[in-house]
Amino acid sequence: MNRSTAIATILVLLTSLAAPAGAAAPRDTSAWKNATPEQPDAVLVQGATIWTSGSEGVLEDTDLLIRKGKIARIGKGLRAPRGAVVIDGSGKHVTAGLIDAHNHSAIVGGVNEGSNITTAEVRIGDVVNSDSIQVYRQLAGGLTTANLLHGSANSIGGQNAVIKLRWGALPEEMKFEGAPGGIKFALGENPKQSNFNNDNPRYPRTRAGVERSIRERFEAARDYRDARAAHEKDSSRVPPRRDLQLDALVEIMDGERLVHSHSYRADEIVMLLRLAEDFGFTISSFQHVLEGYKVADELAAGKAGASTFSDWWAYKFEVIDAIPYNGAIMWDRGVVVSFNSDSSDLARRLNTEAAKAVRYGGVPEAEALKFVTLNPAIQLGIDDRVGSLEKGKDADFVIWSGHPLSTYTICEQTWIDGRKYFDREDDLIAREAIAAERQELLAKVRAEAEKEEEEDKEDEDEGEDKAEEEPEEAR
Image (cartoon, rainbow, N blue to C red; front, side, top):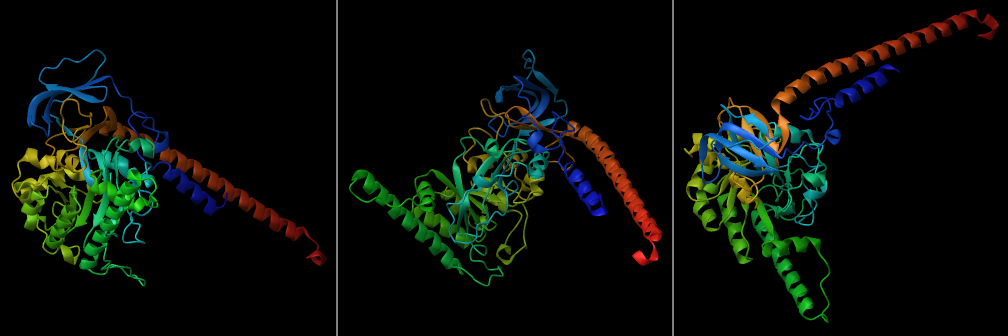
């Protein structure tokens, strides 16, 4: 083994130790080897402060009972069923699992298919990356559900995928069963490629062109739908050729696919609201929507959600009028508001993002928490299953060391479907085991490398000795 081979071996071994272990098997660090966590028949969290994000509000010194992956009861003095896993919640706070309405973390390759202004036929669901370490890291921050969105290079982009962060599962197993289909739109600088260094610019190059590109596609989809209906009514008519792009747009007009639109400026937000009205659909969520405070009443009237940044600004010109009070103002005017991450790192701290709605605008704490629980669930059409702690809903919940909006609070456990996917205590134990194993492997690699170097040196010395023994005429 030469030096380069030894170094390569070290890198392979260290890479194998990069992912943290699951709670069930602390030393097993590979996602594809982790077994699905056990789902106990019953779990009882006793004596915690329960943030329901539902009609019951915040309940102190209260118990949460889970049965077979569903919330069974919330109340005081609940009895533990036989064989139940009992968790002492004294001093702890429990919330619904956090939900990120704008996430790009667990996607293989790039998130933009930017070759065409409309790519509605592209599906993020085909490239879900279940091995991404970001899944585990975001579980460690209390995230349980994420909306994996296509990028914003197109006025009409690709179809999204809603996943549950079931660390160790296969891509198809991570997908949120029964979640409505969705799709990404984009307005402004990105689809018109304002800041792209592109030698071959494509249409459109103006904001007016972005509007026209969306409208033209819906006009084509309406004609396509009419032609299909005519063929179904009279089979002698020639059916239209199957078009996967137009199929997705027909689903939007038929209310079967939700639109999530990247947006910043108020004029373009209103433009898309009016365009949607023309074709008979609503915008499920405007993403970023940093000038939403200027048109909050229009958003509310159009039944459009707003999934915004808490306090991002000044990162490009079209966000020049962004203010941190944006979320609070829209919420005050009746808009369903969520705070999203659009960042693999920020998705680990959505609870403190929600706290900024309290700081900037005085949103009540329980309502602010909904910005990362119930409200994104509503925007994604999954609030009948997740987003709040209520009887019959999925047992997706987080146990916090303290007040969930505090910067001092730590996520201690994250549960999905009544299965514990993250446990901080187990994680800390696993880190010690991984560190020890790492040192052990490094020692073996070093010893092997030193052995190979000694053998190489012996071979060199032997070669020199033979050369000296040869007669001069043979040299």
